[in-house]
Amino acid sequence: MRERRRRERAEAKRQTRQALLEAGLEEIIEHGLDASLDAICARAGYTRGAFYVHFKSREDLLVGITEWVLGGIVETLLAQESHEDLATTVERFLNGLESGTWPLMPRIRIATIRLMDAINRWPVLRQSFDALIVRAMDRLTKTVSEGQQRSLIRRDLDPVRLGQLLTTLAMGTIMLHNVGVPLDLDPRRSVLLQMLAEPKPDASR
Image (tube, rainbow, N blue to C red; front, side, top):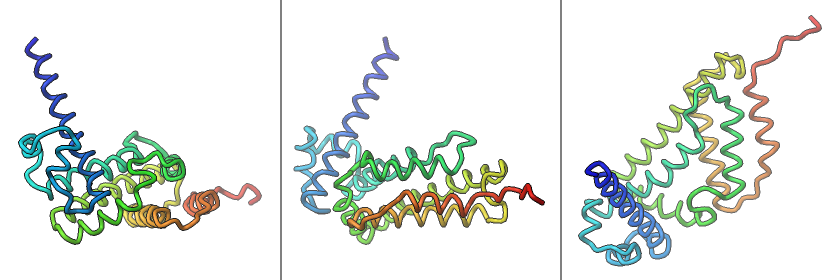
């Protein structure tokens, strides 16, 4: 009974925090970074007291929103399953982009503008954003390294630098998509994978 109550309290706390994150995101998208904390709390259905149980300040809320949205994308797209090949990772990324199933789609355009503004205003948010990018690079580096061990990716490429390059390509693709640049992703997908694939031995030799 005591354990069940503990789990119920933990779940209620999680739900409150999530409601505040979602309300904060919507208010910031609609009204900008200086959206009223009272409006955020009202939208979530909680008091300011509940807000300060979970977040120390507006900046802390923004860090939470960033980690929820961007961290969720990193965790969803760059799965931690061992031995997942790079082609599967690229496929998942492009499918997520094309289908619009990510958080904020199709409103990610204005949310991205707000995020860039917030990063310039609050160093703590910059640190959180940078940490997420490093996490993505590390995950891609691991995927590349495992692919090289399985002879699926060229072994003459440095896995760390390739992980950084793939992260840069992904961020650039997201930004172009956000501003409405038409992208035919299928040929780009094929060219990328062909460039990275380990050459097969020439059977005619």
